[in-house]
Length: 161
Image (cartoon, rainbow, N blue to C red; front, side, top):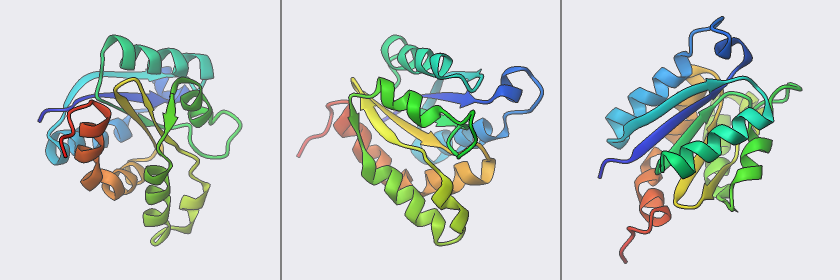
């Protein structure tokens, strides 16, 4: 199965072209190599709730991605609003995935407890918030990668018991 995947980066500096988006590159590599997915859209927006919300809606409703992976905006800084924006567009939360990411990464890095990312479903799309660093992206995505195919089968209505 080839999963249609979209990447959304929330970064003020990235949106202004002041920083290279290396976290999205890690996502791209893991999705293509580990998940067998195809990147159908990639974009960078500033750390603004309205921009993140609009992009999430477009990536799910227009591009009809099976999976949307966000990077950035998930810690404690005042401009980190990706979880709040995600909550406003999802219909159902998937707390176990976010918990698994935190628990797994905290075994190596206690700072993972400051990660506020969430996971949820909008329509037939799974949305997963990831940290904004390449290392954080890799560790958190690796923590749930083995369950993503089954989750995507369920969310997209293709799961057969």
